[in-house]
Length: 195
Ligand code: GLN
Image (cartoon, rainbow, N blue to C red):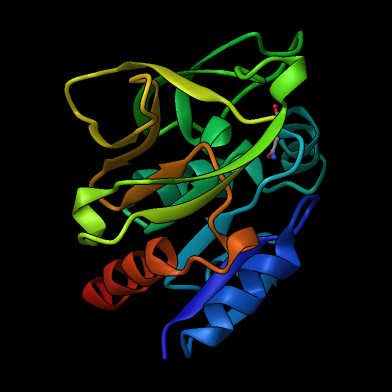
């Protein structure tokens, strides 16, 4: 079984661990650079991207994470995790950095106050014909996609909410909250391919 790390500085680490273990993967929290070296794939959970960003620097994880992403480690970012993977962020907090890797622009908290959280189903053709259960919690949206990245899903109004670039996957929503495991399955496939 592939060993998948979950960046465990802040955010919904447990839900990802449950989903990964349900798929037969070994799921381990990552808080130190040495732990990062032992995994074949990584989840960047939802939470608060500016806080996670700060903590990666406090924990000496920023450089190792950037290097791992550059080196081709399969990584799946949900919500705040998507923001961390994005090369460009709109409405970032002053001083907020990302790890980058995904050639996209995201806008934080893009869904407005009256509709900060909602659940929906949306088609993700790359994952098969059955629509995906998606929970949006103060979610970002992807406002720009560079040539290297691929759109995996849009809301009915056209807003982009899932993207892929090689071994990097990102969703604005939380599938793990609704028991949806197909993005995690894809991450495991990428981790197995890499060996
Ligand atoms: N609004 C949060 C941020 O900007 C993301 C919310 C989430 O991860 N559910 O980081």
